Image (cartoon, rainbow, N blue to C red; front, side, top):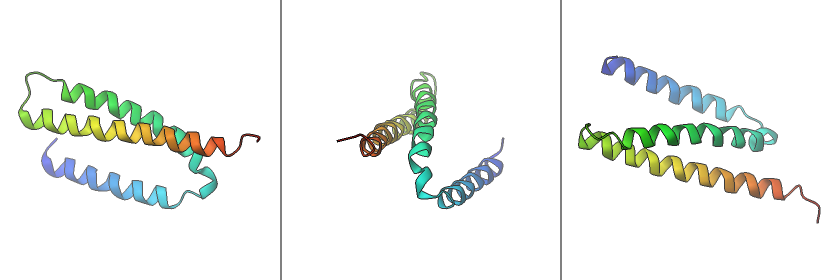
Length: 92
């Protein structure tokens, strides 16, 4: 895939993501958060694979490390938010 195709795909993914997120009603945020935690876990595995490639350039390793850090923050934060929201439904 050439650079223009990849850039076009990236821009379309951003546009679609923004459009989908803004259309979600607040009552669906908790189930959606749980689903995105699973997706972020898959992204974390892919980022680990990218960061661990031994023969690639330094740029690939640095971007892989950044992807691992951001995906890990996303997973941990997502589980913390989900846990807090589910705790609101427990009986006192």
